[in-house]
Structure formats: C-alpha cells, structure tokens
Image 1 (tube, rainbow, N blue to C red):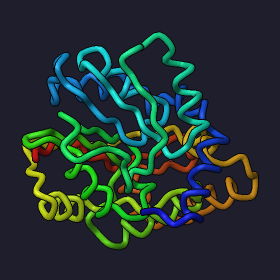
Image 2: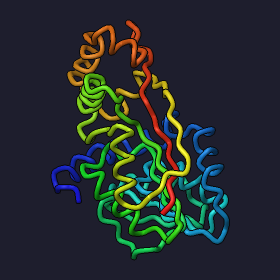
Image 3: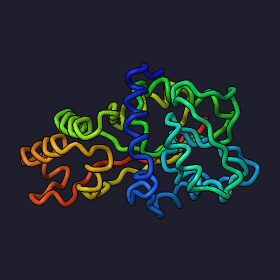
Image 4: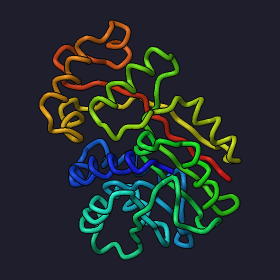
Length: 253
C-alpha cells in the first residue's frame, strides 16, 4: 500500500495534468491499444479491470468488446475528467482505487490490464499480488510499462531523469524483476514483446511539470549524459526526442 505522502504526490501530479493524459499522443497510440485487444481477445461475457486508467484509453478500447469494464484510478480528478471524455460508454464503471489495495473481492475479473502506470507504484510486489488475487482462475493479466535497461548504469540514468521530471515517479523495474514478481504470484507469461518507444521531448517534459527551473535541470541532465547514455536513449543535441524501453506482457493465472 502506498504511503500517504506518496499517494498525495501522485494525486497532485495527475490532478493538475489530468487533461494532458487524455490528449497525450504517447498514451492514445491506436496501434498499441488495438494490440491489447488482439492479445486478450475479450468477449461480451467478460468483466475487465483497468488499473490506473489515466486518460481511459485502454478502458475505452476494451469497452468495444468486453461486457463490463471497471476503470480505476487513485486520482478522483483524473477519473472525473476521463468519465466526462468517455460519456456515453455505458459499460464502463469508474472507481477510485489504490492499485496496491484494490476494493474488489478475489476472483472477480476475467482480465486485468495496466498500461504505462506501474512505474508510479511504490510497491510493485503488492500490486502484482493484488492483480493475482482479483483475477478469476485462468484469468489474464496484460501489462504495458516503461522498463529500465538491464545494465545498472543505464537503469540509474533512466530512473534519475524520470524522477527529476516527475516527482510521482517511483521506479521503472527491469524486465527480469517483473518476471520474478509474476512467477512469485502464480502468473505465467504466455506472450511478451519489448520495443523502443520514441518520446517527443517537449511534450514529455511539460506534461508533468510547468516549473521552469525543473525543466532546465532535466535538459541539463540530458545534455551532460555520457556517450553511452546518449546512444542508448537516442538523445540528440537539439533534444527533440529520445527513446526508452517498453515491455508488453500477457500472463495467465
């Protein structure tokens, strides 16, 4: 369960920027969302939970084929804004919920999804434990998130600049760390893919902070990166864009 300070930091960040996550090109990428449906193959008998729904892009996608979708988020302002944008989709229900303490009975869902959010969770082990608990036997879990590089030096560089830019950032785990947690909680991987994701620097930077000093600190950190770091994250001198690692995984209980 998140500490109260961590919860308040997440609420503050996402309340202030709720609409930015609805309109974000990174979060609304159509091919990414369609792949979720292709991997899960939900039908209208399913009840699905989307954790940390943010702008509601996954919930909206799933509502086309699943019977009922529960979209949860820690931040009530984010959830209200998303519900307004998705008005008319009557099979989506909105619930304020902590990803590490879900207010649902065990074995409630045919599938659970979580996209581009777990790096904000301070206790990923508790999150995965809760996912496993609320899934029905043979239920499916699909997660997409930014992940840290396998090499410690690059892991440190990545998580450092994410925390500088966004105080609500917890830690992006390595793929090996996620795999250990899934195995520990009896979730068996059936499909996975890793990819490089290109982020527009200005959009990424200003989505979570409007503080000019913080923005300059992040720019300076990027400019001062080592040759190895610049190469790995595709950082150019103009800071127009850069790349990070993303992992998509499907697991079954």
